[in-house]
Image 1 (spheres, one colour):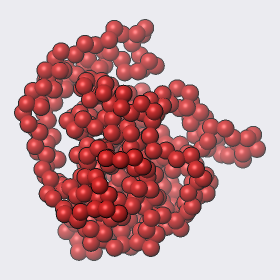
Image 2 (spheres, helix red, strand yellow; image 1 turned 90 degrees about the vertical axis):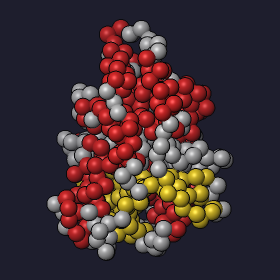
Image 3 (tube, one colour; image 1 turned 180 degrees about the horizontal axis):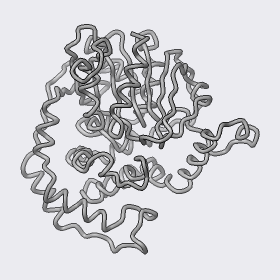
Image 4 (cartoon, helix red, strand yellow; image 1 turned 135 degrees about the horizontal axis):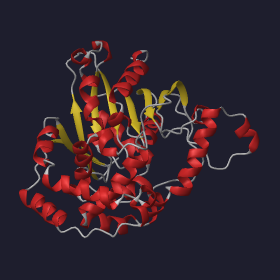
Length: 385
């Protein structure tokens, strides 16, 4: 793997001119006419979008968010020809276990902010010091402050190899991995890339998702919960698959639209936050916090990475045979919105822990239920240290 081993401290410093340009664009937004009923069935309601845009322009404080993010130690390094941005939080506990956290789309490292302190310093957050982690949180290639990739082929296996190299560069021989969404695909791939070094893989959501077409005998053998998840996957493929088709086949085109329009970028992300947070009848900015939601949107807007994130996230899918299990102990937590099925996940993973949460949490677990997620991660790794 071609690389340069230099690790450089990174500090977010967005020029005033870039923020002035954002506010100018927000104030000149040309909103579409509301479609009949102005409801969520056709996308983000115009009335709700206008409310968010007004708040973004008048009340949201990027400089406060920037200062908060810059409290976290950030770095960049070049791996396999591309620049990777990452956070590294050392623990005050001498025996802390290195743990690499991987976000997904349309998320960012912002997803993990509320979980970082409890994971790295449990003693100060009501936990046991023996559960401490030294945290490494890389930004996926092509996302945010990691730069757009210079070549094709950045599938989950290549990202996983880059993560192994990153942990080697940081001096971590034994470590755990955790992730959701794309991170739930990258994390098992890290286990396959270095099974002798990864002591455990933990995921939320995504793993063990059922196929749309199942025969009647297989459906009959499933529990009520499993059949509900199959049905929700079918509904997703019918009602929500459009964004995947666009991003996987026309990343450059959607990137041109979203990189030029902050409101377009906002709507594209908010649409998924509304669909994937729980409960569905609560607005996403209520569930995750309006400022936190906008900070996540800002990561995409300020870096102009809508197209490159779409490209890495969905244009590298492989339709080959399913991967072989790494044998690494794997734990999963499925929140109320998630659709993973254990028996299916076990076909390609060594599942040792599986927890279904029936009435709480959605796709963005670290944002929605940071305490539940943190405790599950602690419990899973406790016996593997």
